[in-house]
Length: 404
Image 1 (cartoon, rainbow, N blue to C red):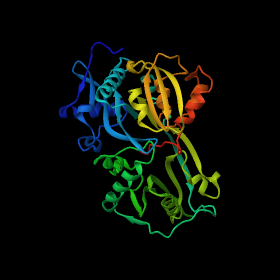
Image 2: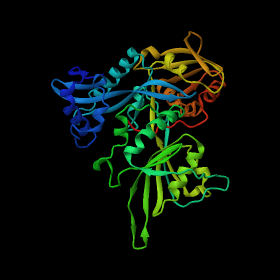
Image 3: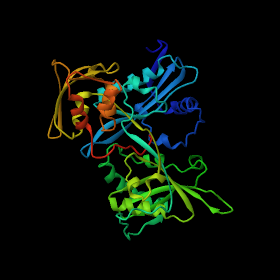
Image 4: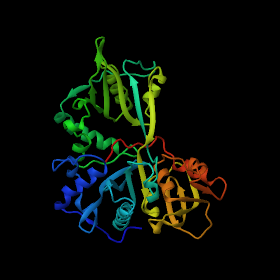
């Protein structure tokens, strides 16, 4: 429960400098000033601040986005960002007040899904966000590795170009591709400036971004210069690799692997990145998995029918949701031909779970059968968890390639 001395409201332009300071202090960072690129995407009417009388002590914002869900469909989502509590004011209910305000606002506004990236893994499940809705793979592989004999690399031309030349092409390709990749987000005009911010402070000691275009895709990367008297051993740090075809994917990876003077490639990719199965020695590809996107179902009956499902199922789900009480209770979840219908019911539950577990499974990232073994899901009618698990799975692992 929030401290009774606290109040919350949306911000206006005069609040922005303090909003930045509170957020920066909470993340042990320095305020970035009025030129901060993320201010261009901040929606003031969806940005909230918590006050202790006249002192701003908490921040959070929602960005209006589309999320690609299974079935090559897009769904409206609230992308939650810049959640912070000023040092010295923790454990007073500041985050709870921010989360409740956001979730009730999305419910009232007809936005059935919320998403976020979590700075700490122990915070957001309590607010109903499901972890491992998508998984991120930190991958490193040496250059000059050959592909196995079955991989065809075409003679299509790959051009390294300027940022100004690359952006119009990349916008078009990204918008087509993101509609077919579960977990990818729409981008508004200034999202590109945020996502590909290239000020000196953004580079972390690496070079400016390099842009390489293929007729059916593109790659954006930086270079970390390294080497000694024996020669250069530069590292390629891939920011984004977007392809409309499998051929473009093979061509662009070959372009990176064959880069002169480079010794390795680092890439935060999807867990099912096929390059692992393209190279002739997959043991040389080092991978580390971590959670990425967290999903929060704001409205069960509106969210679940937005995606398609892999198999038919008919189960009664008993959902527990402390922060969005309109979700709590029993729902009949019926899928026929990939399409779901969700209705209230008084029938006995086949499966019980909390709203966070449902969010973890929504995109096909976390298996309900695994969550059952983790004591997050309870099965009352034998076979229903396995049937639901199969229904929620997709052909590809969900992946969100950008932090917002």
